[in-house]
Length: 315
Image (cartoon, rainbow, N blue to C red; front, top):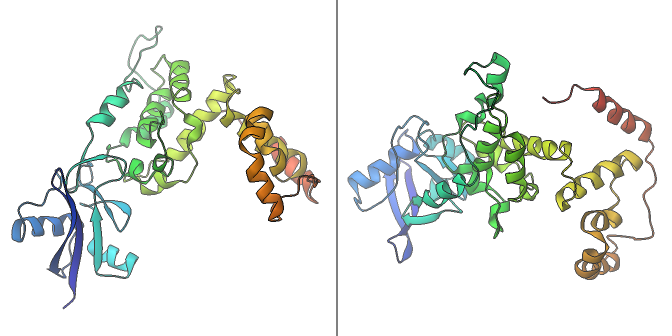
């Protein structure tokens, strides 16, 4: 009979260590295994759970470096995914750890208040009615269970030291931005712009790991487009996006030599990028004298641009 080995990262408030636990193989969920370990082997093991039906989001942890909702994760699926019966369990990344697999959500909840995650009614509203189409715009983002898995896997948060709020807070902003009853449209766009909306690197980890399959990366793209439509184009993120847009329309490919200049401006490029650019030139990765020429199919590329302009604008 195969034995399941769980190497769990423990923390008692001061010290960290890894402790191994073994269970005989049985068809079960990850949460079921954790419960067996606590009830049968070690009552000091700390983790959180409540609904056991993927509704409360409290049992999210990392397995082999990736976030999972323990209550809905089958051990058989983990064995198939990792081709192993050994699993390393850790608390979610980018959260303060309280004990073992338990993390502190309070700082995130306090940060979320800065983004006003509540309905700010329009002055001209007379009732609470919504059309079916308006409701569908907020149905997916409203499904968020605040499990934290998207934030745990967010690649930008690996390096973030500033204001970037993380994916599930951005999802909450999007939810109210799209609500037909809300009257703070521009205010919501500005608050995410002031908190580094353009820092999202579109790694898609938030969408991939979301327990409710919410397309968070698409929501972030929508908010960026809303910012551009409001004339908020004088940021590095906006200039970077327009550089891609204009280069591909002009030649069908990106002009990497000019990208930094278009994005950061002459002064910052000379200050920050010249040493890196010189190493690229020496390594043969970039030729500053080789300006891109239009590709063979550039007419078809431009037709795609023209077609995109005919598509009905997002409301």
